[in-house]
Image: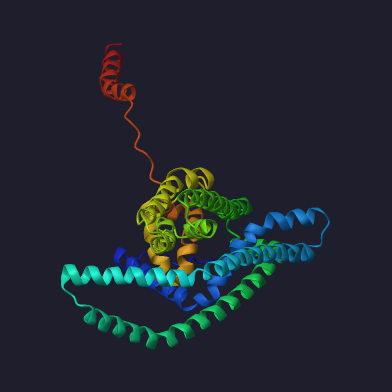
Length: 383
């Protein structure tokens, strides 16, 4: 005779404590292992983006390994082309550095004169303060340079890891599917396929839509800067467009560099305000029209949840966390929506539903139901 183990029912406060402890362990693990997890997540996202191309090449009788290698080479060629174009723009930008320094010195002289005349801060005191902060900056320069070199080395290592992860994720995709079938034997395979298909659709639509959004925003801002007569409009326009990876704030941050450039190189400060106006206008269009219609409702996360997860992922993973916050949260929402016990949490981070107006006819019918029931009862009693 088989005796089933007795189910232990914990009180609510005990369950709440276990949930909090589990969250602390998960967050600590995410932060401690970010050196491996960040390239791993980027590898998953890029493998999803490259899967249609690899699948198409395999349908043309390419061996799977060769198809994956071709995808990676094309990706590296595209990234190399982008980096080459950016480096050319930066090299051209460095040619005007002496001019920027001259204009900057004039602007600093005007600021010193303004401070001397309006606030009675003499120039000698200003120079003393400037030397103080300059010495502190030079003292910290070595540490900054060292950290920059370490960050560059780490970035190159991460790129190498991402390429390896992409290769193996695409190569063993059927193997991983079989693993999920074995890991969740109690669930139907159709449900597992539906969840994996939902995750694939969310990631694919987000990444493909994001690339298209960057191209549209970069074009709009480039046109706006060309109309204002700002030099290096293409570089500034697409630099700001790439910052759309940081939702809600990226484009505004991207306006600071071209605005400062316009303020130093142009005699008219209104051009700097015009640059900020162009970026804010494009950001308004992007937030209300471009992103909602291109990316669509696949990444259906309400603004409050988006801001909270941006702060949380930034504290856990830094700048990569800002980039990965929305797609990671969208994946989590797909998983929550597929599990009955977690559906309320998926609903909480999703887009808020608009309240429906009351239907007067149904309300009147509900008010009349007790009266009709009473009349039917009286009729049955008489009969």
